Amino acid sequence: MTSPRQASVRGDIYWAGVVCMFAIAVRVLFLAWSQKHDALFLWPVVDETTYLSDALTIADAPLERGSYRLPFWQPPGYTLILALLLKSGMTLKGIVILQQALGVCSACLIFILGLKCFGRKARAWAFLGALLFAACPAVLFYETRFLKPAWNIFGLLLLLLAFASQRRARYSIPLGLLMGGLCLLEAYFIIIPMLFPILLMKENARAGLVSMAVAFAVMAPVAVGNTWAAKKFVPLSRNGGLNLYIGNNPQWTATYNTLPSWDWKMLADRQEPYFREHGLAPVASGGSFYREVLSFALKRPHVFIRNLIIKGMMTFSPTKTYRDMHMFADNRLARLGFAVNAAIFILFAVASPRAAQRAKLPMLIVLLLAFINTVFFPATRYRLPMLAAMCVTIGGVHQAAKQWKTLASVGVALAIMTAGAFFVARCFDRQAWRALREVATAEKLVLQGRLAEADQMFAAAISTKPILSALQRYGEFLLGKANDPERAFDYFVQASQVSPHYPDPHYYMAAIQKEKRAYNKAYASYSRYIDLRERVEFPEHHDSGMLLEALSFCAAHQSMHPETVFAFDASQKLETLVQKNAPAWQNEHGKNSFHNRPDNPIIQRHEKSHSTFPHHGKK
Image 1 (cartoon, helix red, strand yellow):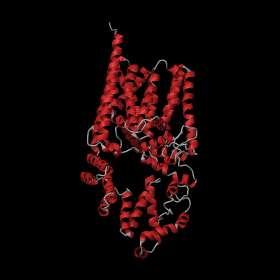
Image 2 (tube, helix red, strand yellow):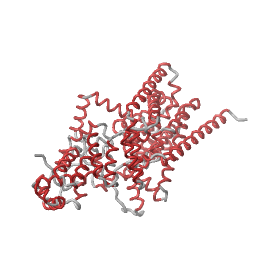
Image 3 (tube, one colour):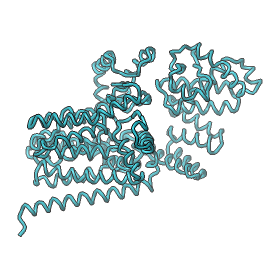
Image 4 (cartoon, helix red, strand yellow):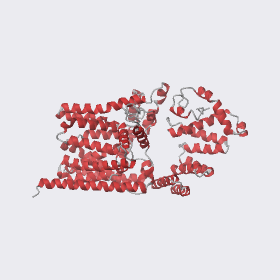
């Protein structure tokens, strides 16, 4: 005869199996849909290229000491994991499937943690939390990218499971290794080995100190090696992010992924002249920077608070900007996902105090991580580990719901957040979403060589709504693939009217006008492009060549008499003049110019193909 305990264990195994099968089915369907029916999933996330290129460099290097010295731009843990998998012979598709398998395991761990922390009476709530996590759109999407959320989530859940164990003090070394590995995956996880061992010290001081020492021992070799490979150490970047053992790559200065808001960027930009003048790394570690931030928060508290609220809402949405929203365009998935995740956040905020008290989970540290993410990391994927922890605490909702005040507050909060989610969804332009999808499909057709169909799809996107992306991409297509500069010029003009502060249409207009030898008009368009482009302190690398070309043309145009320009072959004349006057233009503007400094990486990259780097100057 089966005892009640055995029956209960069998029930747990059964429901865990249901969670596992549900997670597998959802991921199989999502992977098939994303590869066959949505061209947008062919677009790589910018960080993917960094991880894959660095991982291939390491994987191709021989297993010898000093065979490669690579300064990591991102936290190196995921790059090292990718390199190990690639070196073992795993394909890229195999890595995606492995990350989906980690997602399945994470869903099962959420169910197990819910039972372990809140008892079998909370089985239904733990089951619900696991299903919500398994079907979260953002989790499904990032598991199919070469990005680290799947590993972050799995590692954090393992850590929570270890701390929920009554024998956690016996596992000090494995806990230290796990905490160190998490720090290599994500820089802000360094809070974990600084605070989690304190919980162990209450039970066993030696175990807490050992786990902390092991965690930092895992990080130390990577930190030293990375700093040595980069030949410099930048503790704090201009965008407000702690670099720690990362950020030594010069590209870090052009990254804004940790900017709390545009206002923060403007505060950081005020420090740039001083850093450039003294040849310093563009960091924001001076006391003057923090005084400006505090002054801004005091003078404009409503803007400061608004930015935090917006990022807080982005935390639990499957999308955050138009760039990501079009992944779920023209359906109700974004609206539903936002409402569900917002509801999870409210339940977590209400239930977590009681959950931490009853289950003795280190939820205060998890809340601290969530706060740091909300303030400094606007990207959705950085906060997915917090979503997993929130799903765990759903198991304690039934305890908090025993008091009618708590239940009422949860109901009101859910009603407000759901209404807000539908309101936010209505504010977004559905036609713009559809146009973005059509642009993505058109670019996929271009890659396949189906130019006639791509032309029709671009035109359909513009007829849906003439947004900047559709006009700009169609103009580039007509200018390059279709070789129709006349039509391309019209669309670039429309793009400049739709977004007057976007510089690229003016560049292409100038290029077309230069080919027509309308040099005065080309000069005006290039000057407008330069003016808009230089409002960005650090031009993107793919734009630097365009900027240098515009600067060269404008300087040459100013140096020649207009009659001479139209009397001879101006393109050859411009090139000759550019080469002849390169030293004079550079010396005239001064060595401290951002564009003309010899240590400028943009100049170093283009000095072989461009023999001058003039500044257009303002008269």
